[in-house]
Image 1 (tube, helix red, strand yellow):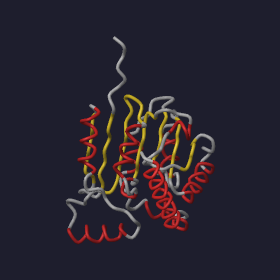
Image 2 (cartoon, helix red, strand yellow; image 1 turned 90 degrees about the vertical axis):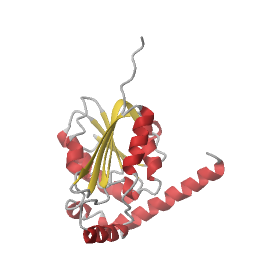
Image 3 (spheres, rainbow, N blue to C red; image 1 turned 90 degrees about the horizontal axis):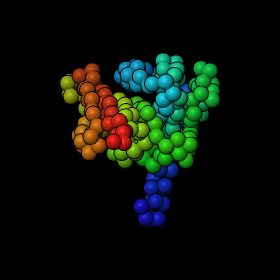
Image 4 (spheres, rainbow, N blue to C red; image 1 turned 180 degrees about the horizontal axis):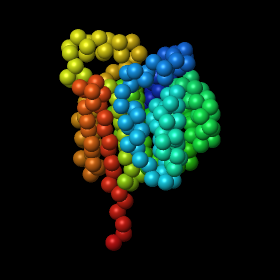
Length: 232
């Protein structure tokens, strides 16, 4: 990346971070109370993480920390990490981890999903599980975030995603109403997510599970990398 491109990217990331801070400065205080009714599929994703003992688990776009706390309670044998571009949300996440008794057990940091390098932030080279819950629909360069997530996976590791789908089997009026409402919060369901994941899976020789949940309201995916090859 040229110096000019790097500066432009930093400015774009900073602008997006400031936007997210403005959006969630007040909302973060009641975010979990309201989002439970329409961020569907999150708990299914967390249950299916199934990290082995000692595994490292990263949430990209950890928001209020709700998902990380739930995962730590459910799969206590793993180590948990989270990044978010919003400092306002990170403040809520740190408070949630502390209140749940996971202060020091859930590691949090500010980070740009499209350029996140785990060693620089957490001293780790790769993660065994990475999950993105209703995150890609809020990241302008979501394809870069997807590619970076795969780059940060350990061999045999898996990337878990749940996000808004295209509401394929919902009534037209319902789709229009939902998408107009989502746009108010800078949320754009990614029409090409299925295709982008299939391209990545084919390129990497990875397994891909892709499901449309709740009549297409949400899309759920798990991309699993092949294990490391043993020396012959």
